[in-house]
Image (cartoon, rainbow over all chains, first blue to last red; front, side, top):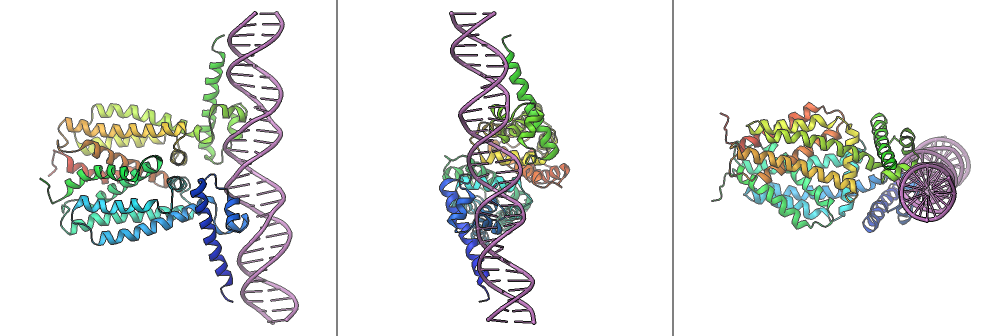
Amino acid sequence: MAGLRAKQKADKTRRILESATTLFREQGYDSARIEDIAEMAEVSVGTLYNYYQNKGDILVATVAMEVTEVLEAGTRIVANPPLNVAEALRTLIEQYYDHSLFYLSKEMWRTAMAISIQQPETPLSRRYTELDSQLCAQVVQLVQTLQTRGVVHASIDTQAMGEVFFNNLNAMFTEFCRVDAMPLEDLKARVNAQHEPIAALISTVKIV
Amino acid sequence: MAGLRAKQKADKTRRILESATTLFREQGYDSARIEDIAEMAEVSVGTLYNYYQNKGDILVATVAMEVTEVLEAGTRIVANPPLNVAEALRTLIEQYYDHSLFYLSKEMWRTAMAISIQQPETPLSRRYTELDSQLCAQVVQLVQTLQTRGVVHASIDTQAMGEVFFNNLNAMFTEFCRVDAMPLEDLKARVNAQHEPIAALISTVKIV
DNA sequence: CTTAAAAAATGAACTCGTTCAATCTTTTTC
DNA sequence: GAAAAAGATTGAACGAGTTCATTTTTTAAG
């Protein structure tokens, strides 16, 4: 039996991640004790620490899964975007936002963001930062594509423009997570209100 | 002696804050133990907890001091800004950035940001968020003033534009704090590269 | 000035994330 | 197939933030 250990390892990795995610959602990150996660995953506390460096890493692993899926869905939109700046931006961003609460609660997002800021040198925080860069690159790519297709003025610096759009949508998402009472629709409306006038500025298609 | 207690209280509050800030800077936030902070401030651990809710609150108190000073300095710039969009933005933002490392190290900023995201309901985190809003309002005010003075196109939505500028400068500052090796000058240059093309777009003064 | 009430200070005890020496299981070697 | 080597598991012990019943200090009342 060549892969016995490998199989057991994969199984335990999954069980720990699932148990943790369940408990994080049910009782919140802080209240979910490592001991409880280990018990639910049917491993000892020590074993859990052989699979994840620390409590935060378990959470960031879920985030990585989440962002990876969003990136993939985004690729399709960027490849063939609506030929209207405001609408294209809105489509991509709503895609991001709609997916964001699939695996993670607001509280889990807040904790993940906090960890990635506070300990930027841990492997999983590096991964988080890298995924963020990829999301940013995707927004830049969208603006670039729109320029190539002639709906964004040729004079526009697509790199600068895309980065600013991304930093804004990201900051607004952070605020959304901060305020438990804010619904997704408010977030979308507010970001759209910010981006629409700028989209009009850089668009070749003028609305009368 | 009417104000004996009040005087002692103020004195202890200050001593705790100073001791904590010193130790945070010297050994980093995590390594500075509450026990050591209490000892340096010449109070017991229990007393320290009568003055601050938890370790993070001591740090956020320092941040509040920092941001308050920056806001004040910003008021002067906004009242009488350079009559050139890119330059006005650059002046205000460099003011923010230059002051940012006066009381706090990058590591302290990271921790403070992490706390304010993760526990948004604590009183001092609310204060942090409020100060952030004020900074944002100041950037919006700058764009507004520039529009009133005729250097920003009348058609521009100054609220949206200011918010986007602020979210961007804030996101870039966060990244600056994440990367220990990044010098202040790089941060300024990068933000300027992002804002300059947008400034040109909204400016009435065209550069040939 | 004495005494009662209120406020503040104290530090031992508690919690929970994390570590690591000892033990057990799987794989490899001959 | 037995023995040795490598890998994985375990849970008691540790450290640091936080709490709270008790003690001490200050203020107010008579």
